[in-house]
Amino acid sequence: MSAKHPIIVITGSSGAGTTSVKKIFDQIFRREHVDAAFIEGDAFHRYDRAAMKAKMVEEETDGNRNFSHFSPEANVLEKLQEVFQDYGRKGRGETRHYIHDEEEARLYGAEPGTFSDWAPLEEGSDLLFYEGLHGCVKTETVDLAPLADLKIGVVPVINLEWIQKIHRDKATRGYSTEAVMDTILRRMPDYVKYICPQFARTDINFQRVPIVDTSDPFIARWIPTADESMIVIRFASPRGIDFPYLLSMIPGSFMSRANSIVAPGNKLDIAMQLILTPLILQLMEKKRRAS
Figure 1: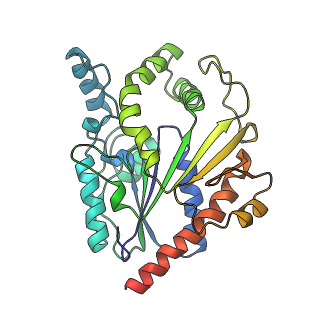
Figure 2: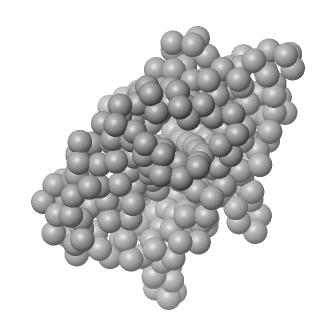
C-alpha cells in the first residue's frame, strides 16, 4: 500500500457488472478532478484468443478439463503483481490492451482477439485503477490484496451470474445453452479456489441479489432487471461509516447486519457515489500529505 501512489481495485467474476462500476468511478474521478491510470484484467491474460482455444484443447487432451481464464496459469499474474508494486513505489508501470472487437482493432492497430504492445502508463497520475478478475487474488506465488489501498468486490449471487453468462454468450457468441453449461462447469474449480476467496479480502462488496425466481438459471428467459434486484453492500470494517446518513440518502435502504446495507437494485449508482467518493477523497488527502 502506498500513500503517495494509491491503487484502487475492482475485482469480480465474469459478467458481474464491473464494467458498469468502472463507469461510476469515471464519473467520480471526473467530478473530483482525479487523474486515474487504468489497467484492465484481461490485459494480463497469458494467451490471445486463438492461442487460448488451442491451449484449452491441449489441456483437455492432457486430462485437465478445468482450464479457463479463471486459472492462474492462464494469466500473467506475476506481471500484474509487478505493476502493482512498481506503481506503489514509483507511480509507474506498464499495461496493454486486449482487443475485443473491430472498433478497438482500429484504435490499437491490431486484430480482434490479440493484444496491443506493452506500453508505460501515463506519468503523473493520481492513482491506479484496476478492473478485472484477479484484483485480490492469492496463489502460491502472488498476493495482490496487500498492495491495494481500496478494494471493491462486485459479484452477483451465483444463479444470477449464470443467467447473465448464458444470455451474453448465446446472444453475442452464438453458443448453445449446453455449451455455456460446459463452460460454467469447466470454470467452477478455479472459481471456488481463486475467485470466491477474493471477496473475503475486499474492503467493500456490492452483491446483486434477484428478487424474482431464478431457481433454474438455464431456462430463464431474461436477466432480472435492476428493479427486480436488491444490492447487499458489505463493509469489512464498519468503523467510520456514517450508516444513518447513507440510509437517509438511499431511498428504500435498510441495514441487515451491523456491517451491511441492503438497497434497491436501481440505487446502485447513487449508493456507490455516496460511499466511494469520500473514500477516494481520503486517498487523495493522504497522497497530498505524503507528497
